[in-house]
Image (cartoon, rainbow, N blue to C red; front, side, top):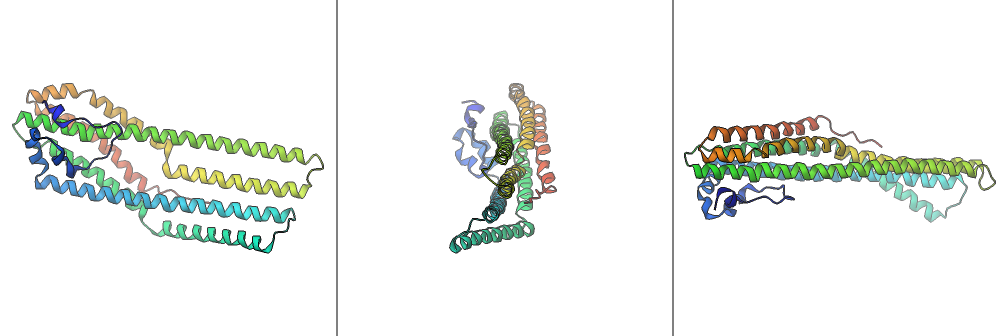
Length: 316
């Protein structure tokens, strides 16, 4: 088996890594590489990466969950409030029980909105997410640099080191930027479509109301009340759409991820040349390839610190 076959390939839809399991998953032919992966200096970085990565994932889930709950509860309270005002405006009398029910629902939604607004303002879940992700990605680069550049005169081991870097760093990052970039593109298109539908809906409703005002179907007060109600609902739904888009930054991330993907793809085109250099013992060529790949990834990692400074300002 050659080095490529020993290390194997990464599934196209897999961009997750668990460095602490890599040594156990390697075949016996990679015993020299296993020794490096099991060394104390490498294991320290494995554990640090896992710790920061897990913290980033937890903080991200917490922040997004709290933000979405705030967005939905705020929009819900606006719609319920508009609903109550609408029926009061057209002089429809609610049963007292129904009036209380809608009022209680609105108060609950307002309380939820206030609760999560306070949580988001005072907690550090967003900052923890950005900081931990930046730390994890920086450590990831250090980890693969240490493994790949571990000094040795064993050409077979050097080839294994290169293929390990190729599979778990280069291929994983290619999968990630390609996959996540496509996801962001899809979400961005859905947002644009939804916004267009809401805009079209508002035009249609306004036209219908204007036509109704020309006849005897509805009086002017009811027209104004209905217009205000529909306008409030559409505004609330549009706010939900725009704030969800602000959370995910789909359009911006799609462009950024596509750019990084193509930079890494170009580097992957050099692999045959780099493998040949490794075969000939030209470690400087291999080291240069690894350094340039890491530089692309590190430049992208700086985005996490940049995002920390522009925390989304969610407003209702």
